[in-house]
Amino acid sequence: MSEAKPIKVRFAPSPTGYLHVGGARTAIYNYLFAKATGGTFYLRIEDTDRKRYNEQALNDLLRDLKWLGLDWDEGPFFQSSRLEIYGKAAEQLVESGHAYYCFCTEERLQTLEHGYDRHCRDLNRRPAADEKFVIRFKSPVDGATKFNDLIRGEIETPNKDLDDLVLLKRDKFPTYHLASVVDDHYMQTSHVLRGDEWISSTPKHILLYNAFGWEAPFFCHLPVILAPGGGKLSKRKGAASVGDFRDLGYLPHALVNFLSLLGWSPGDDREVMSLEEMIKAFSLERIHPKAVAFDEKKLEWMNGMHIRLLPDSFLIDELKKIYSDENKCAKVAELLKPRLKFMTELSAMSKYFFERPEKCEDEKAYAKYWTEQSPKHIKMVADELEKIEEFSTANIEAAFMKVCEENEIKLGALAQPARLAICGVGAGPGLWEILECLGKDECILRLRRVN
RNA sequence: GCCCUCAUCGUCUAGAGGUUAGGACAUGGGACUUUCAAUCCCAGAACAGGAGUUCAAUUCUCCUUGAGGGUACCA
Image (cartoon, rainbow, N blue to C red; front, side, top):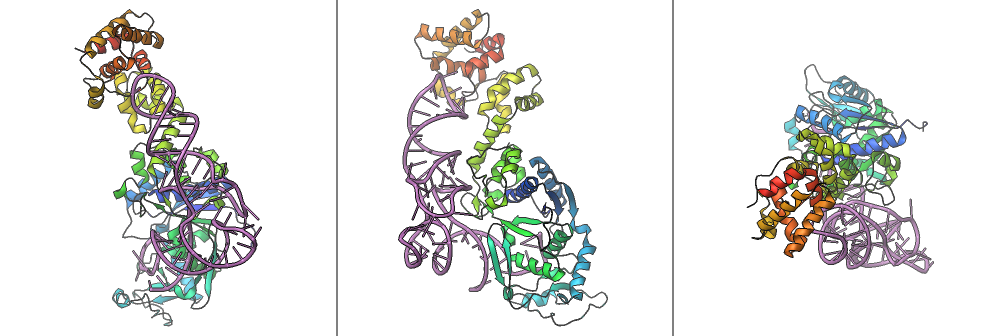
């Protein structure tokens, strides 16, 4: 054993589709582990499948990672620009007797029922000029290969279950297995944290490291994220990609926080955490191996928690993007902050502060609270409000109470119709605060429209 | 079929031989109240099943069951 390598981890996605939340969590754990250990986090693009390559996916991927705040220290490195390295590595294995050229046609392979039959394994032939070939690994027939997964312990596989996997494809591109082993070695990756769909492949990778005479990195396979009812999390079952959640109005840090807790916990009862707290508490030992279900209800709650933790200036700036009346923004932000669950709700919830509603849009509330007495009461309260000199919440409340007493009605029977007349909706912050924010003239104007 | 992995409330989890099995989301109830939230309080809710090991198993071992993954010139 050599001395401890410096910590270096990577996120190595394929640019073939959207950044799935499972992939995002893999990136998060790599990121947290690097930050927690003072290590390096790099980004590697595994674009060795030319059929599935998608340039838009690559752009989205980079955008989504940045949006999540997972800044990488090095990269992105593209495997497609390192073809020569993989080719040489594969040849090297042929030279050393660990791999061989295979000339089998696709047609022949398709006739095989139980996988590749090692037809070319003992041919010991080099390809003729222009002859098509792949390079296959010569898997050992006897014995077993084992590795120590950091969260699952020792995993052992009989070598007879391992096939002669392709290293270099017909198109001269490497397979995932070759490319990732070669890159993880040359890029000095110390720990490979990846999805657990790779567990079965890891013995093959170990064998490759051995064949090259390289030391293998540590492996840590992360459990999958499932849909609430079980099964794969897909767009069909709701939001599944980072982009989906962004569009839904989630805060990036709420998503990161929530995802980090799917399979990991800090060991105490903390759940809502800052990035710094997560980094400080993070360790691979506390990741557990169980597949987890994605509970969007808890994400919603967490998003609300993070919105409430935001500095007021954040909401104020968001409001200023929508409205020109900047003076009101601070007050509106303060009133809305405790009841916001999604950032996307901000514009609908703040609208009546800045624009006079045309009509009552909330039919349910209207049916529930509006009576034939309401117009009369509202006129009276408008009269009372008009008398107020200092338009404060206390004085506004007093005006309402007075009208209630005079008519012997409950506050709700007056306040709710008044809210509907002023806001057009039946729910929101305290009425006194809303009125104070709108100002005396605007309130009276809105109330006087009722007939 | 073969191989591999996993298994605590509905969900996310704490627990690492002896606990009234703790917390959070969700659910139900209550307080507050002009509404909706937020906030606070209370309640119900779990160790998949079966064998072992042990004075003692949720915890260790094995089996069963269930779930997931692999078995590609995809990653």
